Length: 477
Ligand SMILES: Cc1cc2nc3c(=O)[nH]c(=O)nc-3n(C[C@H](O)[C@H](O)[C@H](O)COP(=O)(O)OP(=O)(O)OC[C@H]3O[C@@H](n4cnc5c(N)ncnc54)[C@H](O)[C@@H]3O)c2cc1C
Image (cartoon, rainbow, N blue to C red; front, side, top):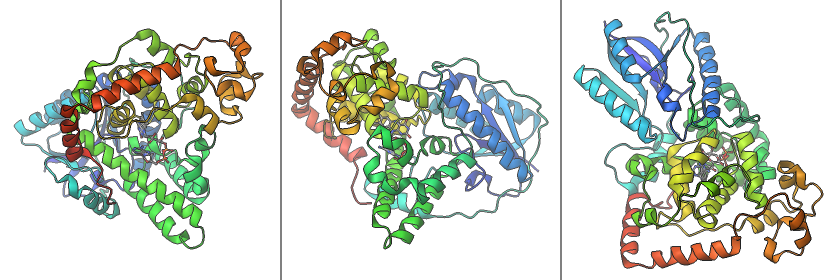
């Protein structure tokens, strides 16, 4: 009898994992550490460390259930060739991956090897993400169908231990920025986060998600777990739905917060679907003309990524992100807006650097969001965040700024809410540790004029219509 390979990719969990469906075959469970993947520009040491925590936790969960995870190191194609020679197998089951170009190309090579060798590759669809031709108008319907289904599958009971003792670890990463407050990986951590969020932390989520001070506690913090699949998107959605129904009449505020959370889980698949439908959006603007207008200035990029722009709220957010591997949505949008409008940098230039700092880097969300925040999709409202106004709105006592930039502890909060040219604290700017690298008001005006002059062009409007037909949200959840 032939064997079957169960290939864990970004679905590092035992519970609610369709790839573990029982079949009339012996299964070999594998995870492949691919050193070339970890060298990609948007990948980083912090993401690998989270993956390693999660692999160890997965091994533990599988062992408890009498299953064995074989961890291999190397090029995936070479590994499948080796497994084919040594342990005859005729099928591979894995989760369908919507990833960066590198994983897309790797999967194409594997597909052709499997075809040549009569190996059936079953790819379990990510909830709400359709591969191949589909009707975008029907997307919300099939998202609901996928996400509300509970497969309740018979899980495999036995697996083959290949007897591999050790595995190498990737050594080269594009980004090795230390991350002392990184989240821990593994399903147990994910389940704890979900439970505390649905039982207490999330009560004021709808009001507290935008400030970096309250967001750390009030957001679910599940993104990295969803990216690496230590918890299933479907079970998070279902548990949250049940909780909302239970408290709908007794705690309306909490129920509303859960509703906002459910919308975001819906957006997650909506964004991944965009990359699935058009992989080029990782490298090309939705509207190509925008690829010609911005700069690649390494001095500005370095100042931004190191938190040394002299715009204090921007720097505080960047330093927090570097040390935590996470920051909330509003601050991510502001960081991206500052880079693309005020620093006038090309999103393709700064985007991978930002991705590497996110432990939760999810290509479908990341590259679509970068394009939205840079105004290159043609279909979204242009949002330029004023970092001084954001500081006033989200950090009115400058507590967050000072927690990240303690050298400013003696400065009054008002110092952080206006640019040097409009400030009443001029003398303090002379004491400031860093000179502001751009004039935020002038650069925002320049960017606005430029972007709106392009948006008015008839060709732009035609292209934007096509982008909407292909990717636009249909608002009928
Ligand atoms: C420029 C930019 C880049 C981003 N890159 C990523 C990324 O690489 N990976 C990533 O997971 N998120 C990304 N986001 C979206 C969002 O900021 C994070 O999902 C969120 O901050 C994660 O924290 P949380 O899990 O506590 O989210 P919660 O607010 O608790 O939301 C729950 C889940 O919903 C999903 N979600 C939340 N907001 C969005 C959104 N706007 N679009 C799509 N899905 C959403 C995430 O899976 C998140 O875990 C990006 C946003 C911006 C503006």
